[in-house]
Structure formats: C-alpha cells, structure tokens
Image (tube, rainbow, N blue to C red; front, side, top):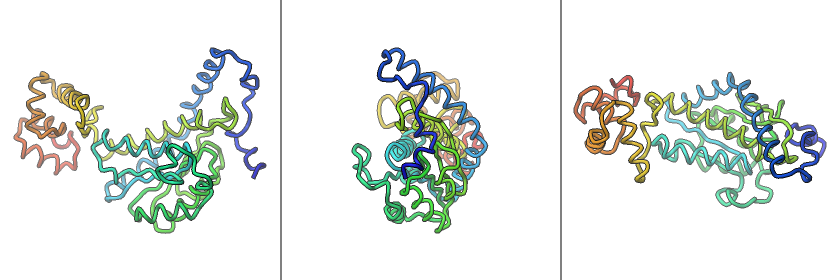
Length: 297
C-alpha cells in the first residue's frame, strides 16, 4: 500500500517547498498562490471528457434521473457541497443532485474511521437511494484509489447507471471502474499529501463545471442569469428582481410588480414582460418550452 501511494503524483514531495517550515508567511502564501495557478491549466486539458460527462448528466436529468456524487473525506465533502448548492441556485429538488460521503453526514465534520475503505458501504448507500439506470454516478477521489468510490462505481455500473470518475492522478484505479474518466493531475502539494489544497481546488472547479453546464443544458439559465433561483431570503429576492430588470430592461418597480404577479417566479415574470402575455400563458409557454426561456419567447 505504501509503495502504491508513493507512486501517486499527489503524494510526492514538492521540491519548491522542502523548507516550508522555515519560510516567512509571505513566502508561504506566495508559493501557494503560484502552485494554485497551475490548476486551471491542467483542467483545461480535460475539457473534452468533462464535456462528455456533462452530456451524460443532461441525459440523466431529461430522463428523470439524478446526478449522484460519491466520495470520502475532502472529495466527499466537495460532492455534498456542490449538491447542496444546486438547490437554491437552480431551484431544483434536493433529490435531483445528491452527494454521498463515506461515513454519512457525521463525516462532514469529523473523520469516520474505516468508512472510506469499505466497498460494501458505498453499495448500501446507493441502494438506500434506489439508484437506477437513469442516474449518473460520479466517483470522486483525489488519489484515485478509494475503495468506497470503487465499490460505488462498480455497483452503479451493475445496475446500468452511467458512471464517471474524477481523480487527481493519471492512470487512476477508479478510472478503470467508470465509463468516463476525468484525470486532473495537479502534482505534489505544497504540504505533502494534503490533497485538500490543489487537488481539492481542482475537484471543486470541475464539479462547478459539471453541475453548472448541466443545469444550463436543461433550461435553468437565461442569458447568464440564474433565473430559477429560489428567493428564500431578502437578499435572494432582491437578486431575483434585479435579474428581471437585467433580462427585460424594465425599471425595478415594474420588475417587482411582475415578480409578485408571477408568484415569485423569475422565469415567468421575464416571459410575461418580453412576450407581453398573461401569467397563465407565460406558464404554458414555459411548459411547452421545457423551461427554456428563449424558446418560450
């Protein structure tokens, strides 16, 4: 096991930070910033396969399926985070994008010993969700070798779900257990083995890309506005009204009036204004257009 870890780029020592404990704070921050700048470039090389993953997720959504992330530790937490943020940002059900972390919810704040080493635990977690062939399951592991993720991907493939693997090493073990493989090799960390750094940043960026592009692909965005945002607090309600202003060119008072008439639904308000139609017709147009504002107009 030790030999396997030593072969991973994420586990090697970074030659630029061999004297990390003797650096000034400014030097530490500077080298961290410089190392972080390499992440986006590495991700760019993986865009062709990320594009394929997004297409698969869109297909799952259109078939009534879900996007399910599985991971352990930092990787699992990032999946849970992305899933949670889809709800208010895109106005979707929390059942549509789901994050599973080895050890369950308590693992979000405290390590659960042995959970990531269990393949069967992942199977149990996916069975509890009733994963089916319409779903897309994405396994996340910086090292690319986490047993929990491997077990989950294997089970997902057995029942016919689409699968993808996201790792931060080339030729990752989890890649062999998925239909699509994203391998963002971020290299040695500033702090040896601390994959919450560059590897974690890379994973967060890729998950942002997958969920955002997939939501755009099912009509959750108009122009570059998140028009399905849930106005669950004062800040978001103000943002919603500003979106109506930006999308239609009306003043804020008019936007607020239409926002109320549309029962707090930004998309409907936009269609009412731009198409000059009533609330019922705007709703009907959006239904016919499968939620795409451009098509509803």
